[in-house]
Length: 274
Image 1: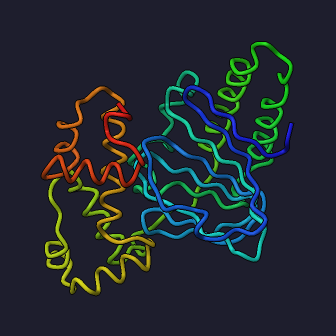
Image 2: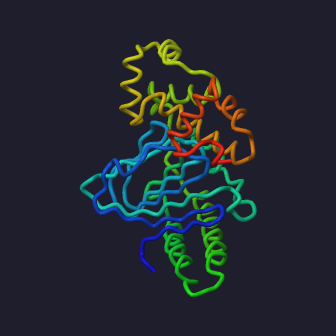
Image 3: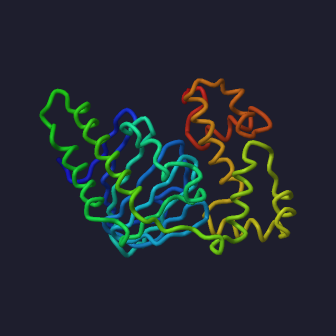
């Protein structure tokens, strides 16, 4: 099996990826309705989660939860090798779904970042075991099912190990106007939000707000809002909610504006997701 791969199962996807010359346009700014673990083998740069920056270095790990807006900025002068695990709570075994690091209140919505010194060799070895799981059953007629069973077990073990490690916390001293604006947006995401309101709320001009927001997050205020709303909408649609109800539930004033935003972000109409 190739050393680098993508494996997609019912409720978990594994990537072991390598980019020799990482360029920023290869790494989109996004959020989604599932969990993500990113473990860096090689590379330098930064992670950004909801406007908060963390150093991207070898042997560091970042856990993001559903709807946390995030992206990476790898240094273009360094090779970038990483493992990425996308998963839903249903992928976990037994009580792992109730671990505190998976709860939305943990980490104040800025992801959970583990510097290299906080990770044990046991944590790092799990990724090698995932590699092994993805190549053990190459000639088996039940390959996918057996791979998935092992990967789910490895993922569950990994999360238990991480729950015993010490993540780097975000203190109130790290907050600035953009992180406060982000917090306000997330608390009011399902109602109409305007630049005028935000500027007035935080006593700044609209120009300053837009400039500072884009500088720190890499996107405009409304791109950020739409990205979060569409991620929420995808989950509601997957649960069987009608698209017209979803549009208003996630904060759009008209169905047509929701439809345009959904198609632009996902590449297909809402009915396709349902």
